[in-house]
Image (cartoon, rainbow, N blue to C red; front, side):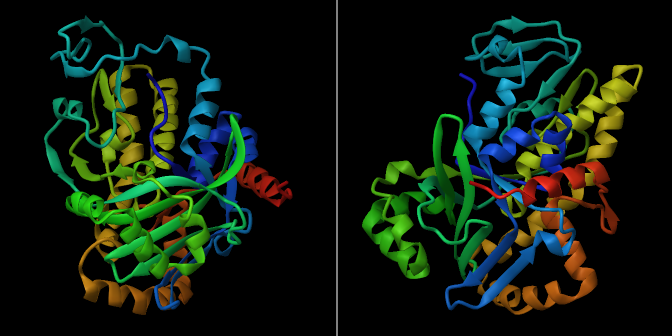
Length: 377
């Protein structure tokens, strides 16, 4: 069946721009939690990262949301959602790109346009072009949702680090249409090869380690009483020479899988969908539309793939010297005007290439600023 997978996400201004164009920003704000600051510190309490959206533009903020809430929001806006054919694993695409074959051998089509959006582990993207890079990250994470309760940092994405070997985070993600309780998305970083060892150690040993790393979070961690509530996530880095060959096109993680370190996955997917829509409307033929889509989106996504690849070892690895340099340099870099601006543009999704900027429309920024000024209940 069609449904959300995972706990929470952080919608950046770029993703919110897409929802605004769809007329869904108000509903998203109704269920999401405004996030105004990204703050991370070491186990010693020394600040490592401290970035506020307002330092780039006072109208900006992120929006933490539960994946289930965003899924329901998008599904309710799509009148034909009930017509989606589920339960068929597509295993191959015909040479002309117009027919699909599923795991039972059934053939589907012909189609005028085939959009591959089946995530970072997609095997269907191999039909388009050779990979420049396609490898799993050695580190993943455990995720779950926790009741927000009396957690004081309700406008911050908070992270706690012990070198790069341990990373723990809490993101406010608001409520869902079917559950008014406000929640936090919790994640714990660990090597994917260490999952079995983590399970063998047992929940009590892990709980003691997590509380020692972040004592302030102990009341929240007390809600984790069953290891089965922690979902496992793994990640992949995939760089393709091309994202399209008419009539087939890739969007989302299928096109540009990357580490979640920069929190851009869902925002990139929304931007892809919007760019594909605009290209199909603007170009008279499909090949031209897909070429236009690819050119526009690669100009935006490539720099995020680069930065996520090189930043991830600073937060998820056994490279203690890299973590030491991170702790030493990130805060001073954030105080320099040039590097601060670039860091904030990367955070908000508005960096384009090495030195360019993705300019969000002023009427959207005004609408976002007005919405975030509204006191939340």
